[in-house]
Length: 85
Image (cartoon, rainbow, N blue to C red):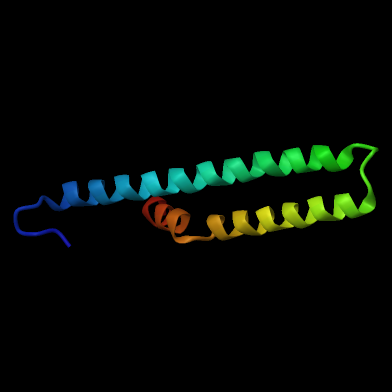
């Protein structure tokens, strides 16, 4: 809540800026996980990998997928959507 000395519009813009920065951080983290998932996929696609090795890669892939879901539905991005909608 803005104090008597603060302009409500300025307060809202500062709040939005903080929200955008947090969302950008979350999106950067998502991008990093997607790149890692791509690398895991490329590694698993190589013919010289065993089924057990591929299963381990898939385990890591699924963990990253779950983490992306948590980030996508987390506070950082939902707060940003609240401003947009």
